[in-house]
Image (tube, rainbow, N blue to C red; front, side, top):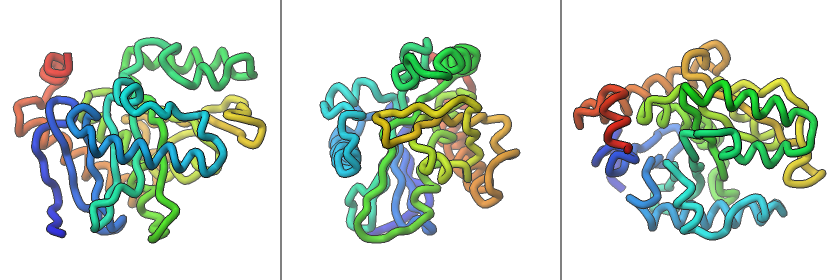
Length: 249
């Protein structure tokens, strides 16, 4: 397999795919729009459905790949040296209202519901993506750097789309892994979603404060990868917010 630091076709969501090899994770990360890379998205989606089903929470995902693609702004797929998808995550947004976030469903009728609405509402003017359906293969390498790659994914979108926030909901032990990238767990009660076996919490990433909370190595990697995304935009003349907004529309 030929590896390069960064192979760029066109900016994701603005017409193409961004992909690079991560030597620590020993895999490639690809960022794309589902409709630009439908086969890759289908592989990512199949892996997510199988992974969630394995843990007995398959109902938490939409198994319809076409419907899921339409609900996805960007997705990230990790592929091994043989080109097999071994993990990934997807993003929805930028959110236009709290009701577009699945977090509202997860906290419905539970302590913290009003706080969820408020946190999303106050950040919407600055741009929010909701990170969803993260998974990693349980087969083969247990390389811990792969989870850290996924934890950094939201920052690529912040740069590409010109937004300031990402959020996710997940079981507490998963969010602990994602703290490395500067995510902060919201100070609200956990919710038993998708069932009583789980204590689901909410995490926020802030483009302006993540360096106060992340691990030094992760901060360095995030800044490097955001700079790559910025160079991609600049190479296509999309290096300011007005250009991005006009093209995405």
